[in-house]
Amino acid sequence: MKILYIICSSALFVGADVRAEAVIADVFARQATSLNGKWNYIVDPYDTGYFDYRRKPFDEDGKVTGGYALDRQARNKGDLIEYNFNTSPTLNVPGDWNSQSDKLFYYEGSVWYRRKFDAPKSAPEHRQFIYFGAANYEADVYLNGKKLGQHIGGFTPFAYEITKLAKDKGNSLVLRVNNNRHADAVPTVNTDWWNYGGITRDVLLVETPASFIANFRARLKPGTSNIIEATVQLDGANRGQAVKIDFPSLNLAAETASDQDGIARFELSRPGLALWSPENPALNEVVISSGDDSLKDRVGFRSVATSGQDILLNGKKVFLRGICIHEEVATEGRRAWSETDARMLLSQAKELGCNFVRLAHYPHNEHMARVADEMGILCWEEIPVYWTIQWTNPVTLANAKKQLSDLIGRDQNRASVIAWSVANETPVSEARTRFLKSLVDEARGLDGTRLVSAAMEVRSGTMENRPGTKPENHKVVDDPFGEFTDLCSFNQYIGWYDGLLEKIDQTTWSIKYKKPVFISEFGADAKQGMHADAQTRFSEEYQAELYRRTLPMLDQIPGFSGCTPWILFDFRSPRRVLPGIQDGWNIKGVIGHNGEKKRAFDVLKNFYATKAAAK
Image (cartoon, rainbow, N blue to C red; front, top):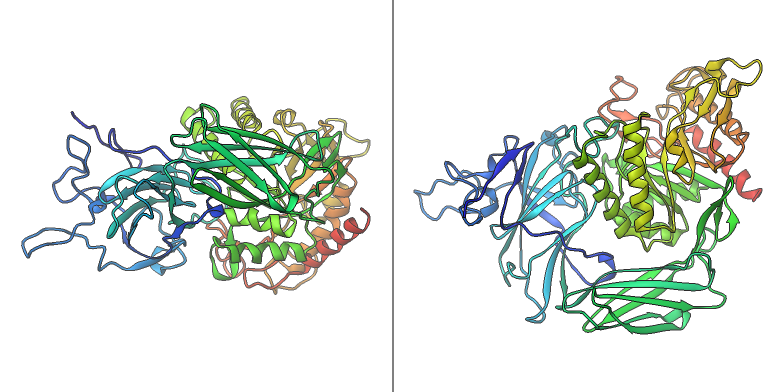
């Protein structure tokens, strides 16, 4: 047969020999072999790696015949092969390429990675999978010259089964990773963070029995405080196969048979069940087994809901003392990816007095939510529907939905995650509201036990203007999308992008929706160590004064239920170019990119201490 291949938007689409992505959820709950470490790489700005000289990349049966994916070596002096992974330099995986090579600091394009590995199976009937925590933004994956597939989306996990392709020794795993920005992508071409490229999260070789536990969910049954409901999804010849779930510390266990779709469902009651909260982050070991497969994890049980203008955690009103976080280690100018990185970031939030973090503006690595589970920190997780998106493009919507479903599937067992956010600062239009409503429906269809929201914007207006208030000082929140969210959450930058400090004291509010009001961003730039009077922009004093004025102003808004000021640490951004001040950094952090705290840190910490004491 004939195979059609097309080069389009730097991506190769093929009609044969491409496998569907596999589901390997809760990958850190099972035994796996790390493929992290040094990978050879080739920088390829023209995407010539799809071809050897004068050769098509695929033959008529879909087999790769040319290009870097074959990982070929010259066998004699007459061979013409114009690449060589063996003699190419190396990059650390996980890791971004920008921070590892000065030549790649601003680079956007394609880089080819190669890793050799052995894959002996412990039993002939076992299956094998390659799991990637994330690669930004498009990843074409090949094993031993065969294409496994292409993943689109820079912050979500993906996996491929390699059982029939893997060899006991000498496997060649090749990835083309491309971080070019596209108008139809999610996020689109304009952002305010660094476009780190590369294989940025863990790569794992996972071995399973022929029938294995592909996914599970264990949570508190809605409307109860002592009933656990669990669902287990098997993959393989699993119809009617027995599945057991065990909570050893709770002295709870049950066994049932899977249905025709390989799904087993459980409901277990435990009087006096300890519920997870920031004050008592109770985690319970869970062991799931079926046939020759088993996995072990830790889960917490809690409920989250809204009642009028209150957020309720385990039925009690909670004020969210939060901060925004980017997935970056500012002191090293690189993408964060490890458990150590997660503990560092969340420990700083804890020191600030936070019980909540907004993981902006895309899905962070899985370690963040797992460590938050342990530390008792509530989380808002977000997909990168950021600023302007192609609202009427069905491909863009499908991309956003896939990233949302991948995120929910990955973190559905994390008690710390209480909110899914579907967007940030999106201009109002009918098309945009339809797009976002579709994402809200997707989130609720996949997981109806958490809050769904987005970071909306505000406008100056006349709705219910207070007597004597100038229209420009009256802020209106009436975004039609607010009808569909659980929180009325929005960003505001009065005193920085919107007027000077004095405007904060003059601001009044009209908010259409009688829902919990959550301020998802506010802040000001400050260069750590730059001191002046409180009227001097970019000084620590200006930033601290903005916090001093903003926090009590927000506290007067009816239904004010929490905030996540922008942001914990300074972070890299190519949009921020002011010489001697920004130098490629967004400097709104309450901690500088040198790791030193700014004066606003203590202002916010003191406010949160007061809030915690008044609980």
